[in-house]
Length: 493
Ligand code: ADP
Image (cartoon, rainbow, N blue to C red; front, side, top):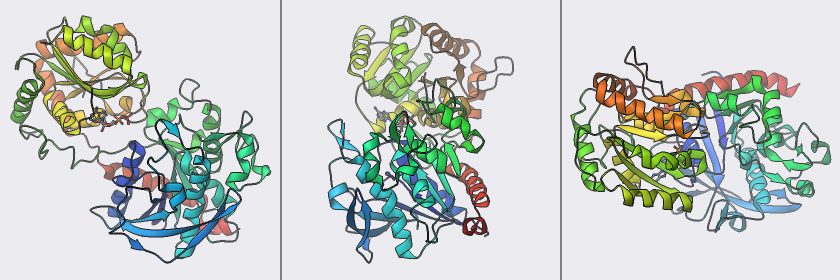
């Protein structure tokens, strides 16, 4: 294989070791898919408390780096991503990482997060040096490792890692790593980098901005979100900076774990099914109705929703129209936690309409599987959605998503074409009570009046490919682009 073949992932999360969201899923899955394409992909994350050390191999050490003006010695342990031979190096620094949370506790971020993640970024590169391993490409993620592309271009001068190509992925633009200008000495870069192109943003230190400037290629987790974040409505103040690098910004959809979310093998659901035989799905619907306490009524369309109850997900608009919706001949089951005021509204609605609506205000992975399998339609009216997983699970389970045309939702759900009888879901543009209501009404009328279309759409949804292999092929192309932009000869010159 020609270069690039060696890829280093530096990240603050990696499932199943440490995860708070989609970032952890990507870092836990993508290196495995790359390995299957022939890449030597390796991961570096912190050794957080709660990660089991017993099976990890202790590497030679200690190493040390200077962060916040102090020399910080650290150890290194080596494990593998489960079910693969992808090496995962854990940086062992008890003071920084042996804590209750990954980013904070009791709703408060740790006050020394800048030190902690500067350390992660700096120490990862030091570890490569110690291992004598020079990857062809480094892949960094979100603000916590945003300093990686800066360090590669600066403090690594004189080493084989200097000016290595770096791909930087934005999973969540809302968190940018913003600190006061006086925090600059912590990261160990000089004042010459505190300028309007690199780290300075409206007088503050902004790590994400520095990465956007220094990374060789930039990505986010869906093509539509890649366009949206270049607009002021979605750019969280960095839209101008992202536009300046628009030619190097690509959206790559996340994959899903096709083993965990597979209706043909899922142990959580009442009966198994696949795109060739949907009899099991009807059994799942009946079992779900029974489990949640709704009338077992195959003729009624059953709507599901699983997710965080926050404004991001557009559920506040849903709450506004809920009583009206429940006058329609349908059933609805909701599983989610979040904003207490919204939780109360859903609970009160469920009390008013026990024959139509059930709300489960807790986190329950097995029930999430059963809602995906047993529902006919799935609601996801998000305000913004970088990629979104639930709509992908729904498609795989033949449950037609009803989504707003934003981010990954716009890229993965094909709107119903009433003439052709094709599509994989129902898509609306503006998040208003009226548009959400009429789109749900459209799904209900399709259920009652054009049932063969529902069957055809289910089939189309279930055969769509959202595997990590597909995403990995796209990342491989980006690594090639980054590598050719900064090939070995150019780096040396
Ligand atoms: P986000 O990352 O913005 O929360 P995604 O759709 O990308 O949204 O992923 C959400 C993940 O969390 C999915 O795997 C979903 O099934 C799961 N999830 C969210 N809330 C719950 C809940 N209350 N119970 C079970 N699973 C949940």
